[in-house]
Length: 208
Image 1 (spheres, rainbow, N blue to C red):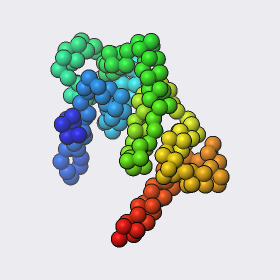
Image 2 (image 1 turned 180 degrees about the horizontal axis):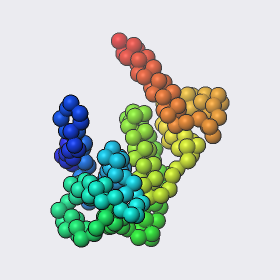
Image 3 (image 1 turned 90 degrees about the horizontal axis):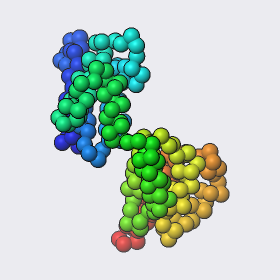
């Protein structure tokens, strides 16, 4: 959203103006998404290595650039809390500790996420894209906490969570023709979206 983005300008390209890169703004509730977006921003500026590893001897120029980008993306109160740290790596780790917390809290959050994952079901009123988005959000949050959900588990969860009244025949067909241990979630989603669109076309024709 435009409301939680700031602009970071790099040096001008040859023959053009400065390159503008969006920096996400950290809030009390968006740490995981912020971390993924901010990591990409730092990579674009070619300074992620000093943030990730705290490289020594320190590249002062890259460290200063990374610190400047981080300061742009966090609230003023947090800037005051981490402003005394001398490397982007220390700032990044301090932000992580404040938002992800200790191992016990991290484990509690993972357990909550896994419970949400197990309970997640697609509603009759949901579209395939809606449900895929919810599943992807949980998957991304879990990965940010250090637990990756394997592809076969995602595929089987996706199929088992679809409303049987609408998808029972296509799901049974896919289970017969595909090896769910090697089929990607993207492939499954594309097939279900095609089925969903075809079903909607038939319903429109019948109503007409």
